[in-house]
Amino acid sequence: PIRNPATGALLAEVSDMGTDAVHAVVSRARQAQPAWAALPFRTRARHLRRLVARLVNDDGLVDTLVAESGKPRYEAFGVEVFYLGELTR
Image 1: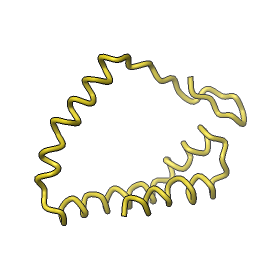
Image 2: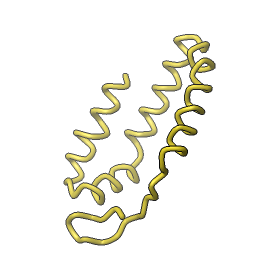
Image 3: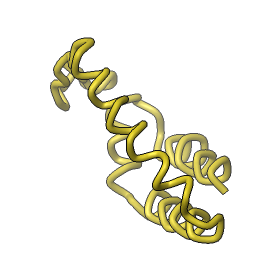
Image 4: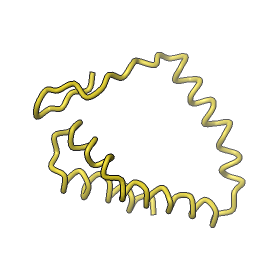
């Protein structure tokens, strides 16, 4: 269970994937990686810039971070989302 630390409210439940499921996800990621690596640098950069724009402009992401961590909005955005965007750039 994932609970809001400020209220104790249940936000979601996340199941344990188990070892086999984790290995399957990693295998799919490894299969996809060569296609990603084959893309020209400019194309990969464009995809990453779009990802950053979506993350930075997604209020729902900030709301989720606030609910899961109990952080204030400015910290969830400024430390988590904005910093992730800067690292991705």
